[in-house]
Structure formats: C-alpha cells, structure tokens
Length: 359
Image 1 (cartoon, rainbow, N blue to C red):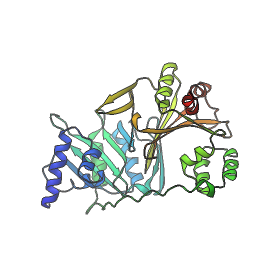
Image 2: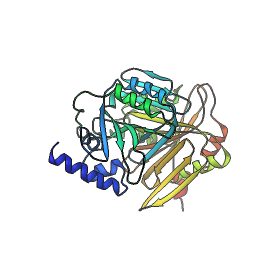
Image 3: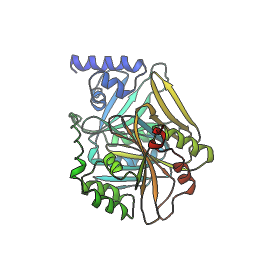
Image 4: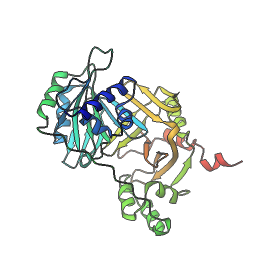
C-alpha cells in the first residue's frame, strides 16, 4: 500500500462522513467512482472494504436469487432508480442479458461491465455494515449496484462473493472517450428516416433506425417534431407522475446507465418534489420502488409516438443539460396489448412547449 493510496482512503472517508455519495466523493478527489472503490481493495483498516469480483457477470447475477430480497440500483448523472425484489429469470449471453423477475426488470449490456467489487462499508454510528455489489464501466462509471436489505440472506450473499472473488489485481480504468457531435441536419436523409419511423412494428426497432440513418436521439425528435414528437416543458415529468399517482394509472419508468436499463412497471403513489442545497429533486418514494430525478437539470422533455403492431406507443423522454438521457416514461403495457387510454389522456394534457412560450 502506497502512501498516496492510504491518503486517498483517508480523504474519501472524510468526504463520506460529510454525507457525500460515493460518486460525489470520488469526483471531489479527481477520480472516477470505480477508481475510488478500487483503491479500497486489499488489506487495510478503512471503513470501506472492497473485494474485486470476476465474471461471468450473468452467472453472478443468477446466483443472487438465493439471497432473497435485494435492492437493485441503476443510475445516470441525474437520475437514480431503485427497486427491491429478488433477482429471477436471468437469461442471456456474455454480451447481453435480461432479468425478468416480478420486481427486478433489467436489460443488461455486459460489454460495459468492466469491473465489479463487493463493498462493505461501516457508516458512522451504524451497528451493521452496509453490503453491496458494485459494477463499473471501463471509465469508472457505475453501471449497476446491488444492496443487501434487512430480509437478505447475507450468508448466501457472502457465498456469491466467495464464488466470484477475483484472483489478482482489479482491472484498471481509463478516461472516458468524448462523445461525438451529431451530424448536420443537412447530412441526414430525413425523409427516409421518417418513412422508416412510420413503418415501425415494434418500439425496439427505433434503436436500429437511429443507427442506420446516423441520427442522434434528440436530433431525431427535433426532425420528427409535429409528426411523431412534440416538445413539452421541463416540468412535464412532475405533472405526469402526479397525475398518474392521482388516478392510479400504472406506468413504466426506464432509467439507464452505460451497462444497464432498469425498469419499474406499476403504479406510483408517493410523489414528492424536494428542494435542497440548490438542487430540485423529483422523488417517488413507494415501497419497493424509489426514483430520484434532478428536476433542475432537465433541459429537454419530449412526447414521442412510435407505431407498433399493437397501435401507437407513447413515451415521455427527458434529457439533462449535457444532452444525456435521464429517464423514459410509458404507460404500463405488455406486447400484444394496446396502450392504456388513461396514459394517453395524461400525456395529451401536458402542454406543448411552443404553447407555453406563446404570449
């Protein structure tokens, strides 16, 4: 252990004691979150201990079913999605996977799962250490986390850690690659792109459509404005969640990281905006499902319609002030079922941005 590593652990612990999240404490030290956690591997007496883990990641996640209820957490820069349940119905390959349990619903992109750690942290004043599994992309961005809860079988969780303990040093992290700028609108075959959009039979075709025509997602919504999309105010997310909570309309809430999309399907009940330390959080605080979204970072919100074999499917998508996706909202539905009319009514009630801007 070098002096620098020991000093880093000490400073990280000080920031944690101030109430900072792992990500915020790491950034305050000029590190990625993954690099900060990796610095806690090995033998030391710090409050946070990290055990490097080895894949295959699909096998590790499958083994979590024996642990009982766990909290699954997926987040991006501005939004945190938490679901409590059992990891069940895991399938896939080394590249991609699915979790289709009753509560834990994930789309997994293992190409971005660069490193994993079993993390044990003793919080000041707490009698029981917090246990988690944390997974990171090559640039140290967290892609997915799993936390023990009161009802978790901790012996089974320890058995998963022991079975997947990495022998040797954890992989190193590298700097994030800069995001490519969107192509100029003039370089896009807009007419062809919109024809392809009109011909979709499944919402999942949209990802391929963007790739085939070389269109950035927000650019696509702008090019389709008035036909398949309309821009709404940055307060639209709060309005739709409060309306869904009021009338009991079940929704789907998607939040993604580089390596995982986590989904909640069902009602939302307790919607609580909160302003703290100059930040405005939009929270859903339900049993089994929590959402924490930085409403003050919402830069764009779009209503998006996609044709499918089951009829139109309507989403509301939000992007932050750096152009990153924050969250996507749908009415709850399964393939083969038409979209809920109650959800369409909620979305129709969201004022268009142009209408709001008109004197």
